[in-house]
Image (cartoon, rainbow over all chains, first blue to last red; front, side, top):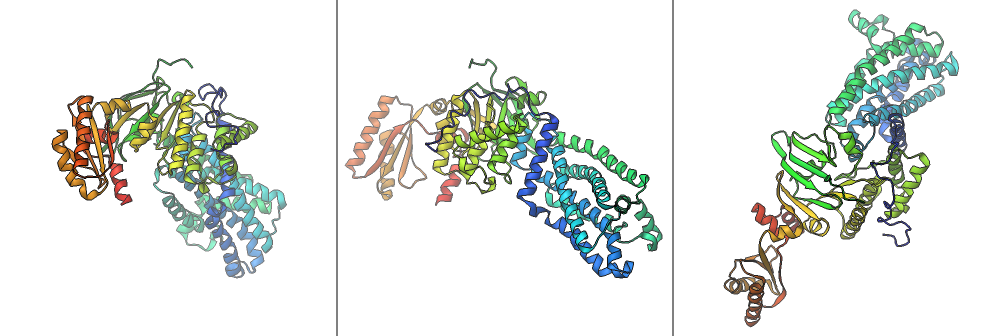
Length: 276
Length: 332
């Protein structure tokens, strides 16, 4: 021990409040905020863990636009206006998988053992984690939109439209996040969640209107694309950025986000409560 | 502090299985207040499972456990208000810095942002980590991580602190520092339950010890109780030249009236001198020493004393203490 230290291990507890006495523990809300802060700190310390899921949408934006843009829409510039809201939705949808990956990693960590033995609101680590994940969604959105602007994307609804589109996307992503936390509680490894996530989300995002309108697709696929929630999300995103969104389009996405939360939040809580 | 009539821990028939195997099998423990209680046993004996049940992380499959009178299942939240856990592997977020970890935990315990920062500073200073505050936990040495982990359990004063293998993997200096910290914490009135696979650690630190093997408590008491339960003294002889050990063994057996066995160390013999009083034992030992000198067997160590916990373990289980064997093999 450092001889110059004014405090010694023996002094640190003397006269200090006891764990059992401390009256106002953090409220559920405040504990959740603290965990959200933790998620943001982790983003700061280990940003590289997002590389693959953010890399994919950036790569797709570049590839699809310059490879197929001319053929699909007459010019790459015109195609970008159609494509970018789609790859934005794709980016954030893929990033939601990380809510599951992080939770699964956390569950087997010593840190979580400590959290779970502390006198705090039980679901706080999960709720806070999901709030903190918003930081990831914003980062992914900023990267894709920034790239789009550099490439010549010019949203007709202006800054307000883009912000509204990002806001709606966050609401939907929050619901998706609960789905991944529920999955994280039943899967064995973070890697398994990642591969399930990509296996589910790749077909779902490709069989949607992210890259092309479904008009020329065969009947069955056309029907699927029409009911695919990702298509509804992308339609609303495009509408908000172009200033043509209908209330119905926006409400559909909000309801979908709320429905995902209503189903998977209680399920997550239940699984978490029984988790050992 | 007044003595609390309710024991810190009381378990009855505590049982927990994983699949087919019973990790913890009908364990009855009573841990009085304000002592260091050691759970001693080899790897896989069930020590960690006991701790995890007491810290409300695992549910018992049978039996009950109470912490300060609160049931670990029904009153789990009340239990959590009295205990702190320092797990076997760092119970910290390894991506965050030391300060961030302590601030995070302080905030969860209700500290304001400012108070959390100052408490974090106090703890880091007291635990010799003041210069490491901005380092990520993953970049700390084993000893520093351990100290931070213990500090993180002491943001508020817990009534009961669980330390799961607090010195495993530490160098001798780190171990010594951790022992000092443990003694300081218990002197302040906190009850400590620690698990260890080191007999010496249990001997040095624990006021009472439960020896655990394959999920069962096979002995319980103070270190002296456990050693005394053998009802015998032990003689250790180290010869100067290991080649002479067999000769020494042949000389000593009839003199001591006991079975003299070669120990794992090639120069050491040990014998349990049973059924004789201390005076008689001393007389025999003195004669044995003279006999060895007469036969020109050089002796570098000659000790007569209580049995070691290792011998207690050997007697209780019929096999030597597993981790010590593993270590002896590793060092060879």
